[in-house]
Length: 86
Image 1: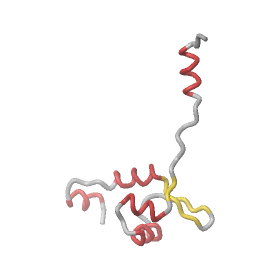
Image 2 (image 1 turned 180 degrees about the vertical axis):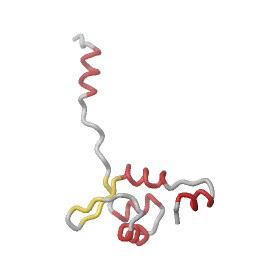
Image 3 (image 1 turned 60 degrees about the horizontal axis):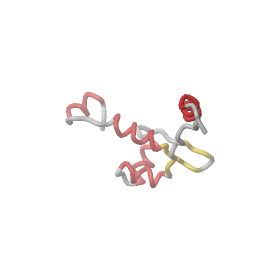
C-alpha cells in the first residue's frame, strides 16, 4: 500500500494538542520548592502563580507554575529591588 507523505503530515497536524497538566497545591509547592503554606499564603495575598478554583478544589497548571518561576528570576538583589520583588 502506498501512502502519500503529505497526507500523513496533514493527519499528524490534526492530532490533539498535548493536554495541560494540573497539579494539586501540595504538588505545585513541591515543584517550586516551597512549603505548601507559603503557596497558600501567596494565593491569599497575591503575588503567586495563577491558579484555578473548581468548586473547593484548587489546581495549578504546570506550565503556569514554570512561567511564574521564570518571571521571578533575577541576577542580583539589585534586580529584585528594581522590580519590586520581596
